[in-house]
Length: 162
Ligand code: GDP
Ligand code: MG
Image 1 (spheres, rainbow, N blue to C red):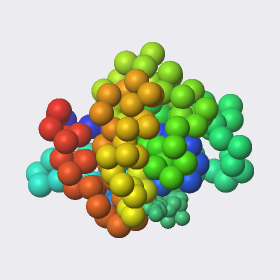
Image 2 (image 1 turned 60 degrees about the vertical axis):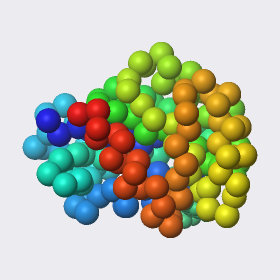
Image 3 (image 1 turned 30 degrees about the horizontal axis):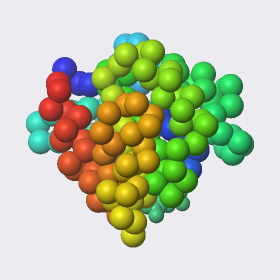
Image 4 (image 1 turned 135 degrees about the horizontal axis):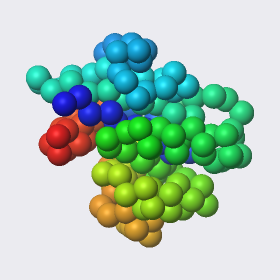
């Protein structure tokens, strides 16, 4: 099985940076994967022998105010078609209203997921992670995508379930 992993979260939390870390081939041939739409950005990756598909969301500019309705729709659709969801939040911003809103949606969706706190570089990991327990989505996973720190460990954990 080739799991489809969706990256969701507010603009600027580092989704596209993580997407680039996780994919060698960009723009996977969507036509080869029944059920995937063309509205989002797909990439293919492989960990050892295990292939996976990554879906980037929120790539359209102009959503700086947060999770507006169009972006929310896109994120919800990506969540629906995914086998696993990586929910990215920003260590520097702390928990925001948009984070809560997406967290509520994810709880209702009931998909396998992992809360990931990105941009932990230069911060005290334990202190920062503590803030995010209030989202009620379990243990947050620390990441510094732009430093490629935690990426292999994250994808290894995710694929372990498939
Ligand atoms: P997206 O809007 O969620 O796709 O976020 P991007 O991947 O475009 O990243 C937004 C900004 O955050 C960019 O300037 C990245 O370089 C920066 N960024 C991404 N990951 C990290 C990280 O781990 N640490 C730091 N300090 N900055 C990061
Ligand atoms: Mg992006």
